[in-house]
Length: 237
Image (cartoon, rainbow, N blue to C red):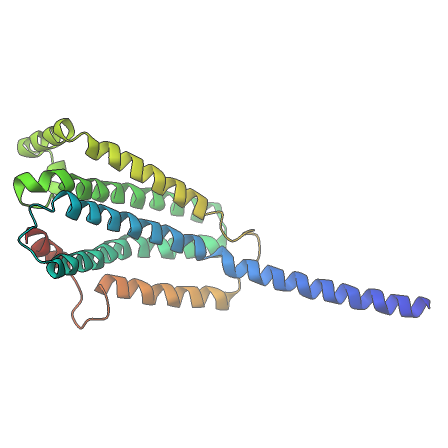
């Protein structure tokens, strides 16, 4: 009886251990890149929202265009947004993988610092997108980074924008606050981050990230990649 009890206890321990290993492997798979994908998705949704607002507030200016042309412009604009997001998030992706694998204090600080820089950069882009919802009907041109310059014209234009269209900086602050909340919450997705990361898993994530990043930089599967010049020409139409 004692021997039978010991065998039963040994089998039970093996079953519990196998379940624990499966749970650990499952946690490892979900630690990354789920949170990073949430951040990219939230950023693309935010850009799509600003473009939708642009077409809504400037619908009278765009009355001469057909619905198909407007939809095509929105689709091309989304592709350019994907280009911008890929160009800024792909370096952050490599830093996130490095931090995910090493778990060192240096990698964590470098990743957090570059993440803050990327967030600030997109804050400027979102501000310019929202500025066009009010400014485009008067100028007929898309707002560029020149409005943030130190020239007298740039400063005067910026002051006029803040004075006459105060809703733009307020909306920018509101949307970026929501994005900051999503980004902070996304870092907690996937459970514990203390599980050892397998090399094969890191390689698979890197390859998938590179493929998606290259597609984003190209703007899709077309023969010729999209470029910022295409967006500027589109913005004038």
